[in-house]
Image (cartoon, rainbow over all chains, first blue to last red; front, side):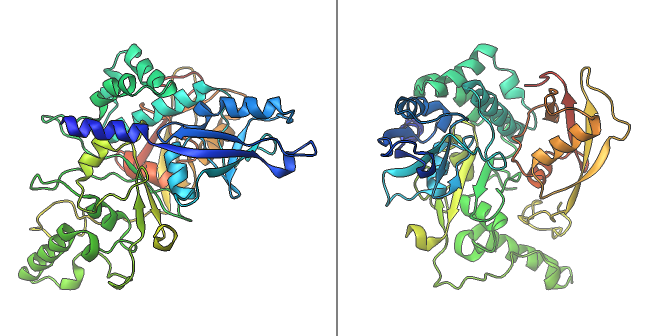
Length: 310
Length: 109
């Protein structure tokens, strides 16, 4: 649908205002160098947009002895996460511009991957698209069927940040194929103080209807998103399963039900942030995967405590 | 793993998290001219990062840090070193093990 293509374009055009300051400990002169301001595309990666940041601090005489890296409030920023994910997870829309600290010393080897050149970003992006392709199709056939020049166009589209160049190729990877539907919707979910969540999750229910974002969250994070709050389907499913089991004389407690909610109804649910917005629980997951994935073809969903973003 | 599903439930998929394993089986296969390993199957702690798998394999092969080594899953893609082994296993295991190919030159990149 034409309207939905407009959504991809709007997501692509999303930007984060960032102010870069040199780390206090790396200031050599009497005065810290001037900060550098940048409107960074959410769908891009830090190494693709910070060449000028590096030049700026080099020009002020900063000792740029090691690879440039960034932190926000002491949290090292992984360049291989899209900028929008870093901002949604660590930053706050109430504190703009986003204040990021620049380092040229003490590279955090344990937390951040080395990124000596832009080709490293290309390798990472194509590998992640392949991983997503494998989740969607059970192989990387869609990407492998693509000409080398089209793969290159994906990368160049992202590198030079041209929507039409990127999406004219990427739509072949993200659009549903009626005769050969996706096996899974690729997602990564970020929750504070937890490892990233990534699991196989199908787009369609047995009856052909579509799973929703609420179904996904109630399944992978039942403690945070109780089914009775976010997934009418799961509640009905569990009730039907319990009934079926009872009809066969099975003990009702053998039935797999979502764990009882630890959150009372009065408690605010955590915030869900995708591209800076909170999608509704009833949003079909497949639609999100097709139109709201990042260029690496994954849905990157941030879960934040409600009080921080309320 | 649909072990707990009621037989006449409306969907074969239980919408239940698969039981989380503490350790998963990985099987290494050499590709191209990469040296073979005597033992190919190992149990790896599921909560580790893929980086641990890479370092473990380097040690097994007695590779120096500078020796080129490329790892792939299901002859398809290279995960990032900070991806969690459990996630990779849940998404890409075949017949209860995670198949990892290794090569000294890019193979499926």
